[in-house]
Length: 339
Image (cartoon, rainbow, N blue to C red; front, side):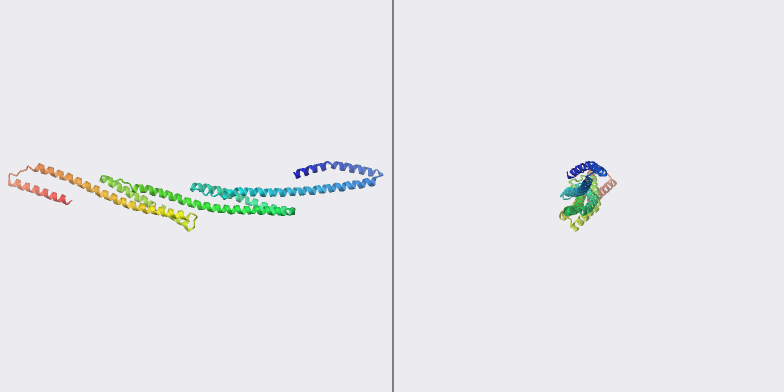
């Protein structure tokens, strides 16, 4: 490199310093001895001193120029490295992956938080590069165009990166709100479908005890449905807020709200219809139980008639007693007939 060549040249010049000193000492000694060519020797020594100082001066100037050039080169390289880093980060903030579900969105948000922390730290680097560019421009006016062009490119890339980072953060937040809504929507829809399966069951009781148990269980379903009222209202509220805020998925959100509302209405309808069916089943089982009890009673009375069919009356009192017994039996039959 130029710096290495210059350093080698400086070493070569330094190596000749002793030769200059030696010539100077020899010349002064001759002059002191009043050498016949003292004037010529003095002139040559002055010439050597002049050339030596000129060489050192030029060497120093070149050293400064090379160091400034190196500084400029390093500055431009630092700017390029920083621009390259920003381009690399830009691939992330320009990604069209905003998550497929709540968990993946949260993962992307954590990654983006890391990028924002990096940007916050590098804000100082941007300011330092700008100040460094101004200082170098003062020392190397001829490099002004390069410095300003590189700073302009760097600041443009920096502003673009921050803008795109903010835009991605906003979209990720919107995606999070959407998937949080969809997650709660799916949980609620799955619950309504499970409840629908319960309410459309074809299970019916075969006795009064079973019918009572089904009615009681059906009442518990009503309690479960009522307990979900706040959940339905919460999902409805979140969805309506997103729509009012002109969320990018507002049409999908509106469709989901309609779907959920339709399912809720359907659930209430199914519960009412199932209640009517279970109550009818209860009445049927009560009726069948009464029938069974009546048949048992009639069978007992048939047995009574058969057992008492052969009774005869031998006296007036016997006949009156028998007539009274049959009158009482007829009244009992009449009472059962009313039932």
